[in-house]
Length: 510
Image (cartoon, rainbow, N blue to C red; front, side, top):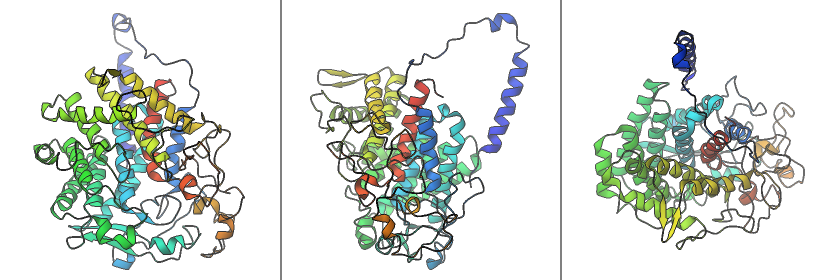
């Protein structure tokens, strides 16, 4: 797997030598005043602890041969023959949520958001940076396997219908590990363009610490995007029986093409992608008024991402993306003329019943990221007669994260293992069933449902997992069968990592 540890050691050595040489510098130089960053005195939460746990969670979602460094030790090897049904190696990657299927679409989005978190805030992560990079590398190794053959992407391993008819540990699974792909004849532009975005974003993560690996990633990203753009078609059409209703693409594939091009523009600086965005941006939905950002719809993310080119890099040809990003902000912030967002009585952003917390974490990330860009450009957002400052965006994001971590009517943390009170019965097969170490004998397909339907707490704590969260009235039953509220998912955690890093740093915890 991609590693950055050797360069980390080299960097440490370089710093040691620098400090040694610095000891000989004249006292006049040392006498220059040192300006320490000002941190607020009090934080209601240990954001650093939450950050470490939110990254650790990904180790509990791993598929494949687990390394000796595995920290969630109740998980063991699984899916070691994945891909064999089609004569390819698809071992590895992540299970997306509480089942044992590997869905390529949300896995790619998870990878993109993990990477974006590190790109924007990795410099503040300190000891957690290597863990975050390892989480990204576990995904990119799989995505490279899934895209190994030109004009073909293996987008799913496992039959969801069969998998969901069982409640069994990933180490025991005996349901069909069917392999599904997209190609010229069965296109899937959404998942192809998202995979390209993931590889491009990850190439930036590894650019300095592992340049040769970074080049492999960006080269593959370029090839995959060309395939996505040339052979256009929705993977929800060609693979409808397989991917629906689990990860149907409702928003179409235009948003992924804009998103993928935006990441290739950022990663390559090749004018080809800037020209592509300028030529196709409007037809790909750059100015649409949708304000939901998640594994299906990337329009808002693309607008925020491209706004940096104008705000920070002063690329005038993309000035419209500042306006597009501002429109999103104005639709979101309470008290503005264009505000459309719904909040629970307790103050949580509420988009939908099913896994609402994914929109809380993705939105919070966009807020702190856009605040960063605006601060760099010394600009604000104007919503009619209301001025929204970067500080206001950060405060809104903080309030959402604080709710997630326990500042809510139930005083419940929605991150497993964080705080005094958190969900005990999450919708997750591996967490809910006895571990292999405690129960070596196989648990058969249907036998696990007695546990699933019970009121007993999960025996294995999936530390860092963030569940779907409360309903629109701030209610949370903590019921294992309620997958809408009790199931964690990788794409809930991925953007949260960036926001938690910012908050931990701003309160002097990192």
